[in-house]
Amino acid sequence: IVARAIDNEMKTRGEEFVYLDCRHLNQKELYSHFPNICDKVKSLGIDTREQMIPVLFAAHYQCGGVKVNKNGQSSINYLYAVGEVSSTGLHGANRLASNSLLEAAVYANNAANHAIESIRNRKFQEGIPAWNAEGTTHPEEMVLITQNFKEMQQIMSNYVGIVRSNLRLERALNRLEIIYKETEELYKKSKVSRKLCELRNLINVGYLIIKMAQKRKNSIGLHYTIDYPKN
Ligand SMILES: Cc1cc2nc3c(=O)[nH]c(=O)nc-3n(C[C@H](O)[C@H](O)[C@H](O)COP(=O)(O)OP(=O)(O)OC[C@H]3O[C@@H](n4cnc5c(N)ncnc54)[C@H](O)[C@@H]3O)c2cc1C
Image (cartoon, rainbow, N blue to C red; front, top):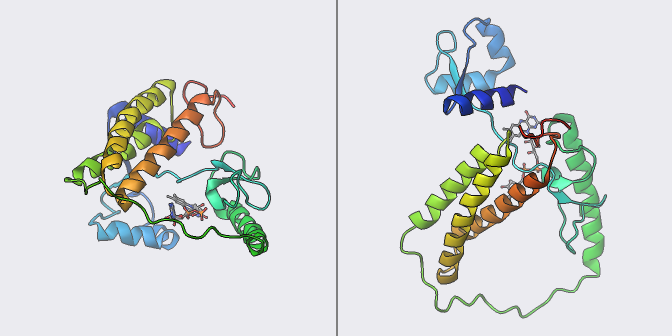
């Protein structure tokens, strides 16, 4: 609720952050509760006795996108998903943190035991040919990749973040389409690089998240939309 209120203020005013005012608090108590944060804030030159702290919410990375069974197996053979990325059915549509992290530990154990057993009977394909980079070149300008990287991050944070709407999702998808086409064109003629592969993965994951969010006609857990605020 606090994060959504912050998001609302930032979006309404077009601001990049809001201020947290701790000036009225007992500074010793504040430090004893949050020593690391206080040290960090101080290292940035902010005096909590006299100045307010600029703050911004941070998103959890994945909240249960990959459906798994009790052994952490996904619907793809030999692909396990464990932790926040998996959808086990235990913690609904919310993130993992604190007590719920137990889920990650239990499922990791199940998945590891299952993988150890199943790998015994598994034959691996040999003689896989090396990657053929014929006809491709290094992209002349890294900015062709880095700019799309930045745009992806902005699109996903601003339009597909903790508060969504039909309009924001539609805008996100339209922009993603352009980035997708540009990146695929670049990929076809470029030597593969880690950065380029990561960008393609970002686009794929972003696409899936937007499409799934568009299908959701309610708000549940961390998935909140102003067009369907009810569960
Ligand atoms: C801002 C923030 C604050 C939090 N505060 C708390 C807190 O106070 N208390 C608490 O209990 N929990 C907190 N959490 C939650 C906790 O951090 C997560 O629930 C936990 O880290 C999930 O663990 P995980 O192993 O599932 O995923 P992660 O910790 O996200 O690990 C996934 C790993 O996979 C790696 N990876 C991704 N893609 C690839 C790839 N293609 N190839 C190889 N590696 C890859 C990533 O680099 C990462 O290291 C917080 C989370 C956030 C984001």
